Image (cartoon, rainbow, N blue to C red; front, side, top):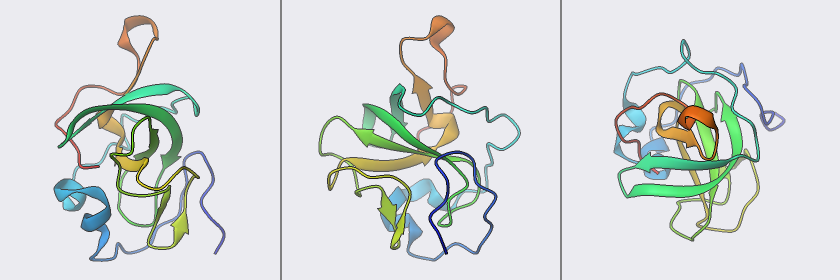
Length: 128
């Protein structure tokens, strides 16, 4: 199958058991951001709340990936503290240098520099 689009995707498949190794310990939670998700601007500077702390980078993907349910964001990090290169389980979502990519739940991403703080509502930390 072709890679998901850069915007919200409607692909629905079962999640492989190994997804947690790419995402962090909250990858299996049942929380869904679908009802509150709004489309964030690709290319925007964002701050992500993760188990590793606050990380900054550029939003490269938002949608429903094959590896987990709910709305996820792919972020190209400024520093090599991520877990991937924009792909998970041989599925490419965006391109970046190795260890510069992470996927976090929509609710863990906040757009920087927009009026009123922008981005998704505050929520508990998500895994990288």
